[in-house]
Length: 305
Image (tube, rainbow, N blue to C red; front, side, top):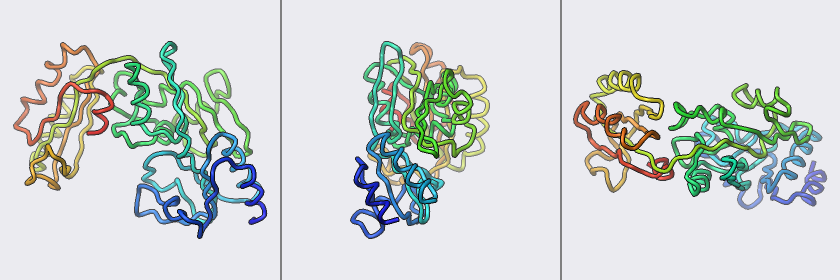
């Protein structure tokens, strides 16, 4: 296989990283520190041609393939033992078409990158709730975000995707081409190929009202019951998620609270600004809070809370 690797390296525009190479341990590490796998080759792709060559190489050498995007991959599927990792994280191109209200992005992009580019035109696609989440795995997994109740999941706003198959063939999947493949990548499971780019439908808005409201953990049952009733009555323009977490270590958080378990309600309202106060009034009047971060905000800032 070493001879084959040398041949691949001659035409590869990105970089090939092997065990023992400088940076190998850093390249194989993912966000979930409990995952510790040692691939035979890490192919850091610079473009679609590299993805095609990597897939053909893996097929020709009977190698297991793992695909890595730009984000977290908690499950650990982005790396494999003794196989080939198709690392798409260097592929970070984004192009926004404000006239057609669409955006095309490569699979190494994270939502913070995507939102910054789309919000330059006062637009966004239904994305994640954190700026460091990768768009690729999130989209292919369905994608529930702050704007989902109003505009659907991320996969509902996917217009097309370029897919490199296991045979190394590049296909465009959409409502017009390869419809079965397009159906499959929008929540049908996995192993349909490697997504090399995504085209999304964008939605227009300028400012949002949202943020986190924290409550002490001992009020968890009350908060859960309130959340159930509140969200059953709010308009679709409000996205809300309930969290159990540890209080962050941040300047706006009292030192005595940092690291303590809390229950929090995160929310994002993308409706008429003059109706926001009525939407959030029950949340603020429900009971005294530890911290209230709800305010008029920019979508990019909201994802960084």
